[in-house]
Image (cartoon, rainbow, N blue to C red; front, side, top):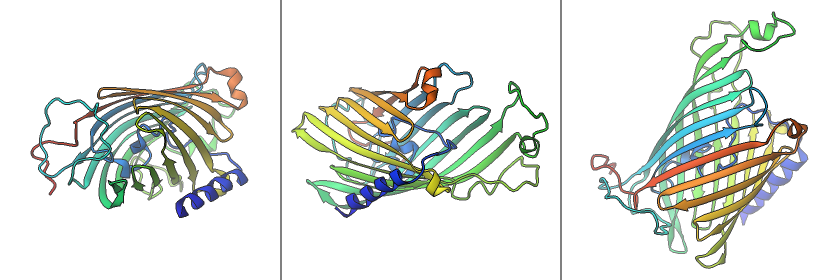
Length: 334
């Protein structure tokens, strides 16, 4: 109840503040399918070895519209791990096998936003701690630290500039490489989850190929996620309302919220609707067959740009290996 009160307070604050978040980090609508992309502590959370591909095309129909592509891998290291036989994940397992506190993961991404492009990677180490039980299932407290590195580049070749000697462009390098760190923490039970993450801990203090003396830095971003599952019909219908709050260092001017509700049928099919404040209404679809998970999201933009585009489309494909969370023989972490 204490958590729910704090969550409601943050939602109220998000309505009271002006919302004009700048997209400096990749944005995802199907974040629930792969929370690892926004929170390092989710690496290995469900105990499976998972490979995920995500493609997001924003404002389809507009030239040089934002687009994001990501490929990720995550796993959980278990005691006495070994290569599992070819198995199915049809069984509705809600807890990983015993042992195994270390989660590992990584992903590569390309995020294009107008003349700006970020291309890079992240490698993640997560540590999971059992904290009591809910309905007989262990609760999971996790912390994750990610090392990220990306190239930030500006391409003005096909841009018509009103001032070819624009000081903001002339005084900066067109391409730099920025290493940094991301942090995340989460608490997960069989009924609900809550997570907090922050990016660019050093604010891009170290830059390679930076030949200018101009003082510049990257913004830090903050993410708060939370969701609760209500079982409408035992083992058949479930509804999951969730919230995703996003902000940056410019706190009072850049809070944005995704308020989502997803309905599951036997955990194999789901349909959802999300509202992103001052931005879009999002339709979410998904299904699971054997070890394959497929998700599709379409954003119906609420701003004037809707008359110039065909919306935003996002596709996610995930493959999960292992009936339980078993790993390679030589990866014995304990």
